[in-house]
Each structure stands twice: as structure tokens, then as C-alpha cells.
Image 1 (cartoon, rainbow, N blue to C red):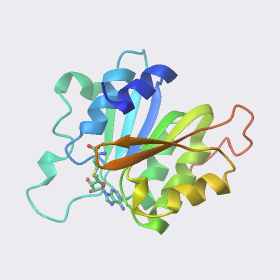
Image 2 (image 1 turned 30 degrees about the vertical axis):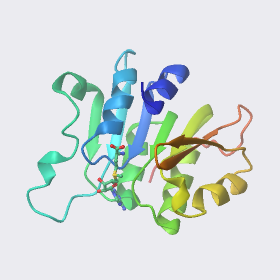
Image 3 (image 1 turned 120 degrees about the vertical axis):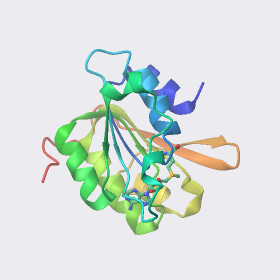
Length: 172
Ligand SMILES: C[S@@+](CC[C@H](N)C(=O)[O-])C[C@H]1O[C@@H](n2cnc3c(N)ncnc32)[C@H](O)[C@@H]1O
């Protein structure tokens, strides 16, 4: 059972946004959970690929019976995350696995965090790449947790029930 599936199950997650899809393994894990709940939805953001012919592989792991709970936004994070949050808000869970640069992460992390409901869970893949995840947890003054998964590390932060960074409108 995957970490993402288990986390979505433990949250009873209905509203999830992820960045970074590739073949769709993470999308499949999240959808396997959210699709069990009435109104459960996942919106995924992944930029259009430059190489012609690879487009049809994006999200290929997601089977037809889960696609009615799923929306794929083919845009870069800078525009795609805002669009996703304009359609799905607030979030029970979010998963960041796209632009791994420090600045890319800081942009995506803060947008997703603001849309996360109190008690919701923020997850980032490959946190070993740079210090962005650790600096972000300091900025939002929350404890982080780290899970080792084969040769990489996944970080997550549980948003406190009393957190004030939850805002009512991240759109636009
Ligand atoms: C590691 S893969 C995602 C893997 C997927 N989450 C999984 O676990 O199966 C990273 C993906 O992020 C996407 N990506 C990289 N930079 C991006 C950006 N700035 N905006 C949107 N997507 C981006 C790439 O196109 C690629 O498909």
C-alpha cells in the first residue's frame, strides 16, 4: 500500500491537488482513495512536454474508471496551481512532485499550503534535493516529518487546527 494512498485514507480526503504526474503512479494512488468518497476529486498539474509524442503517456497509469474523479491541468506550476485551486478549495491533502528547484518549490509550496484546511496534510517528494522543504517548514512554523522511500525522502507537514495561514481565497 503506498504512502499517498494511506495518507488519503487516514484523512478521509475528498479534495486533493498534486503537482507532477508523469505516468500517473501518484495520481493512481490518490485516486484509489478519494474515488471511494462521494464528491471525491483530485486535480493534477503537469506542464506540457516539449518532446512531441510523449503527451499521451502523461497519466497513462490512471484507469478509465477513476478518470471521472480526476482533472489534469496541462500547464506549468506558475499558472496551473492557481487554476487548480480556483476549482478545488480548500484541500484535505496536497502532494508536490514537480519543479524541484529551490525557487520553484517555494512558489508551489506556499500556494498549496495556503489552500490546505486546518488538519490537512502537505506532502513533498524528493526533499533531499535542496533545503526548500526544511526552510518552508521554518517559515510556516510547523514541525515536519520525513519518510524514507527506497533511495529518496518524502516530507510531510500536518497543518495545525489553529493555523492562521488558512485563507479564504487563493484564487486569481
Ligand atoms: C517526478 S515526475 C512526477 C512523478 C509522479 N508524481 C509519480 O509519483 O508518479 C515530475 C513531473 O513534474 C513535471 N514538472 C516539472 N517541472 C514542472 C513545472 N514547472 N510545472 C509543472 N510540472 C512540472 C514533469 O513534467 C514531470 O512529469
